Length: 368
Ligand SMILES: NC(=O)C1=CN([C@@H]2O[C@H](COP(=O)(O)OP(=O)(O)OC[C@H]3O[C@@H](n4cnc5c(N)ncnc54)[C@H](O)[C@@H]3O)[C@@H](O)[C@H]2O)C=CC1
Ligand SMILES: CC(C)CC(=O)C(=O)O
Ligand SMILES: [Mg+2]
Image (cartoon, rainbow, N blue to C red):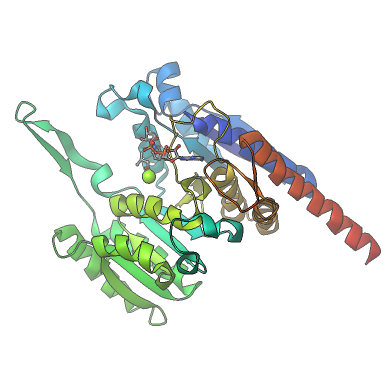
């Protein structure tokens, strides 16, 4: 299959880990007889430097025509003094909004060799397998006005949601729960916020269409605590934009590192942008030590959900598992008796496991 993939490396470690994803995808393509054509476009700080805007038209047009999109990360100290509306982060918010990618799926799945590395007890973490579904194109990050007022002596941000925006994300969450362990936790702050009260209403209403899914409402502060003390009680979590952003970074500790988490930002027709959960990590950018696995696992999600390449996606996920079992880890991870490596070596280890697996598969089929 010949597929056009848009790459948006962005800033900081975004550029480094995108090279890893490309290498892994090229390896998968040659193992499975596909052809992936990559087109890189600017976004974030990189785009501000080149074109004076965090989201150039050329990038939007390319994304609108792509089979699939991979994004690294945006942002960095260099652009922190710019006004809020032209900061790198607006490039990312802008492309999500332009493409209508309202659902952000963040699977939180531990890899056995890393479980001991979580600051939480291994028995607490073991077996936790959570899917956080975050509303991605509404709420506080998009509401207007968002500005300083009263001569800079006050400030306003706006939390605005249409009922229909809540309905489509809640429906997506019920559909996902139905395919998993059929338990949905809806997280809100309904004891204080009117938006959360409407959210709860929508969840209760939708739940009538999904009698096979059990629903639990949880306030966000308690959810933050339960994620750490009792993570195995969760199956699918659905929540609005800001809460989902925060809870998913928190949940990454269950896996051992923020650098492990992939995500899929999608809309109803399956079009998607795939991106690790973490940011541009300016503190380690340029050092060659970033963990590429969240990015590589995002590429696997892209193959599965946007390109219908289930077997190829499984191959990448198995290769990641295998190289962790072999002890390879980047500096943010710890593996018992492991071998600490940099971004490139970690990527090589994944690639090695993909090619070795294919060789042993073909030997098996030759002698079958
Ligand atoms: N999706 C995106 O593009 C996102 C962008 N950002 C932006 O990134 C910039 C930095 O934000 P931070 O708050 O520092 O969050 P961050 O996620 O970039 O980093 C938080 C911590 O995790 C570590 N880390 C993150 N990814 C890692 C990886 N792959 N391997 C090893 N360690 C990793 C970093 O070194 C840092 O100590 C800001 O400009 C922020 O706005 C933040 C989150 C998401
Ligand atoms: C620009 C931010 C909203 C990015 C972020 O933190 C995220 O999407 O997780
Ligand atoms: Mg975030």
